[in-house]
Image 1 (cartoon, rainbow, N blue to C red):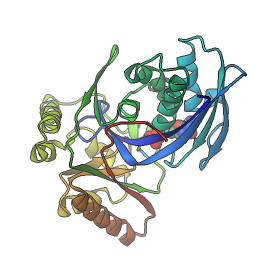
Image 2: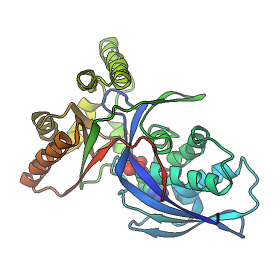
Image 3: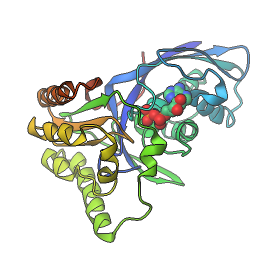
Image 4: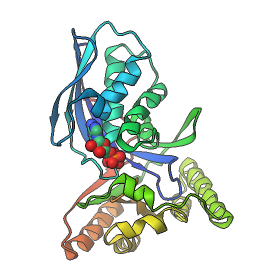
Length: 306
Ligand code: ADP
């Protein structure tokens, strides 16, 4: 095999109560990428379609993740990468993670899989470090492993894949405003009260238990964020109205996707997820705010070979 074409999925990190530790993988939103062997050693990004992102290997998350991986293995050949961006950078649905994860996954396949998907997470995290200054795994882990993932510890890295209930669907709306991850981080406080922490870890435990037992009501009751959402949601236009309309249309829960500005909702069944999308669209239509909206089943597989 000389070349491989991939679907690199979008992901929702945090999921309300799971700030920096939980994430899930989407099925209908994502980029495409081609990774090809080349006689010239090293990594070159030869094409980026659909976004204005750097082609220089060291400035693109795909290149940085690939180089981190190739430091650990002696490859007899080099690699060319073509990126077909369909997820906008800075949307809060893991645009950088899709590229970081895609690059390491594709190279691993062309090298006959010397690394497991879990091992690839560590390399892909180096791409995230370039994008946000912080080597976090909450988007690259679900992109590579699929389903829901929990980053139990990032040092040493310990990732747990959590089964996804069969009828769980996500709706994600991306208002077309720019919200820099650094700005979304700067509003956070460095300490939390014991009372908030207790509520938050009760909800994280409840969400994980709900996912394992397919208890949709418990999932819904647990999708709350005491700590980050109250500080961040003010940066997102119409956040309260969107969230309210998600609940009105039957969603189990709703919150900020990643560092925003995208807002997600989880629902039981496609019909409800579509109704939630309609309600969210109405809110932004009335505000005259352009947006993109996705409805997707949870993608249990992660990155796919096309
Ligand atoms: P997201 O949460 O959507 O991944 P981030 O703000 O975390 O958005 O990351 C996007 C940042 O990473 C932007 O500054 C972008 O220029 C940079 N970047 C570098 N290479 C890529 C790439 N291949 N795909 C997406 N973003 C990239």
